[in-house]
Length: 498
Image (cartoon, rainbow, N blue to C red; front, side):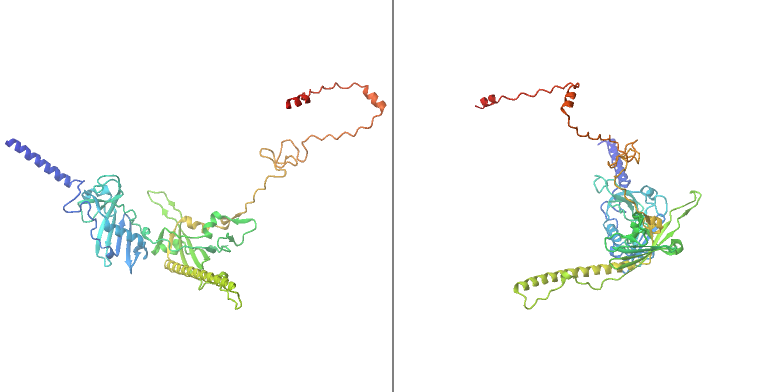
């Protein structure tokens, strides 16, 4: 081999090595000697059971979750109960999270993936995990979502992933095949929902701050609601009362209010609407609803405005549950008379057996229902006394006045009849005896039919002389009758029959 050819080969080899190094160190690199590679666990050997603190920060919001005595709470919401199911799910997701693709990127490029820190533009959501004593366990920064194919999927189809990075690893950005959609830095996103629910309401009493009261009642389950003081020509405006007479069947709220924000003057709970609700199950709820002021906006950037009022609610609950069940008539056992026949004894024994089985079934159902109601009461008491911010639509109707809760009865239109005019005809002009008919120009009460000509009196008997005189008068020319069809010849018929 000539020296010149050798130089060329060495040069090509050097170029190939340089290209390989560039590909390995470029944006599309899949592994790094100092970091993670495709398929590796993002948070390897995460000790999920040791995690007792979670802090999630993003922009101006943050939430602190803490496990106390085996129960997860939201620390910056006064220790309110947290959504355990949601927390458990995300911790398990972190433990199983794998790298789907590796991207080499310096910190100056983090904005492309919305992975900047703190309150910078295009910042990410930082999740920090720790033990009960505060010892850190791990952390991950979540960026924007990723919906394309990845190296892990063989570049086939789309995906539902997210850009993430590990704090301390300044060389790599990763794509994971989980969007982690429910991780939010707002405290309200982690609060346990449905603290109470009013089932089978019987009576509702509203008392406004000005002393006006409204009382609604149902005589039995499923019956229509009545309101005390309704006049005969009044009825409930169900558009506005339906929420009141069946309030908060499944209570939902926007946020829990704590600290200075829960001040009665700010929430309007110093002058509340009081709603007392009793149910057919024996529960009693005392609800306080307040109307707080809207937010004032007055700055160089925005014109001075006042937003919609905010509404707040606090409640107390109690219950008087049945101690025992009263047996019904079909559960009673009949005594067998000494002189009863064998057939009667057999019938009574079968009847008593059926009654015993029915009683046992109903006793079991009653015990189970009482257990459910006791657990419901215990849970609802845990959340009593807390101030909740609630949606406007669920609160506004409790503040409405009487003229908005009651309306005049709608008198049904009388069916068309009598002298009612037909469509298109002026009222008051009708045909007597013809319901709903009316013709312009006809006076009501006058017949439009032609008068009936009275019958001619019977003709008097004519004497022979008068008859002769009449016959001499000129008579009108008689109209010839139409020829009658020819009758078949009887003889011909007989002949043809032969």
